[in-house]
Length: 386
Image (tube, rainbow, N blue to C red; front, side, top):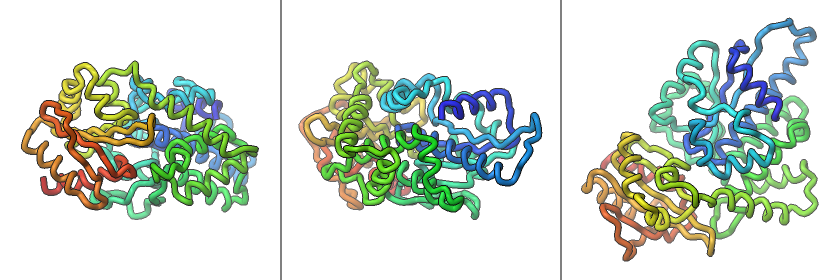
């Protein structure tokens, strides 16, 4: 994988390609998004080489070829904010210099100057700044509930959308299915052990090792994890899972050196005018940081948003979740807070506390199974009738 990534960076810089396949994760660029993009691009590159070998016996010297590249949907200078991504890739021998980041290229120029196909992983609703990609999207792999309200893709766009704990589960399944067509069901996983390890680690983190408290793991996630463990020949799977989870959780929650402004950018989704960061700590802890609400106000201004929905989670003493709503317009902020309290599909069980913050509605979240994926439909419903 390391050679593939380095060669990809070099070929992109020198424009040494005849066509492009870009695999792009979501703008939060968490571990699931980053690994889904990196592994699936690696697979598409491997698959292309396998097919090419069966139809071409003598390559033309100097001829340009299809380039499959993963794009991490975060600016290069913000990569250090993705603590668990940086840790996991560094531990796997993948350096920052081997990666392609969002601001390394003008994507709009890149997709228009040569034949380009785009694969979306870990999302299927494009951010406003990415709407220009829609005509180029040929495949989607995502684990969120399907949202067709802004589905503007071509009729022949292939989609794999299933509500599972980790998008990496669906990426692995797609690789299995496509490899089986070539009668090579497990060859990619055996010849790309780093990809196999990354998929396994990510699913373990996303499902919190199939925690019954978190309730994110599904039978499909477990099926893929078991399959990957068979490839890796792990003697004690449960011990390996627990060890991985501990290391990755420590990396994700090690945010003490980050300022409030940096935490707001660490894992954020923008839903139209609502800024939705998710923290690996409780919102209560975030709000205790110096100038936290000032940082929120500045984030709203720079992103063109009017509302912020802050979501926190802690696993230090059992699973805890909390949330806060704040914004530049007091009436709209109050309406969103009330709307989320009343939301019933599913109920988020937001309970007000005695904690008071200026222009902010703060809640404990009693429904522990609800992550940001469960909030997004509620936010979209609110925005349709604010």
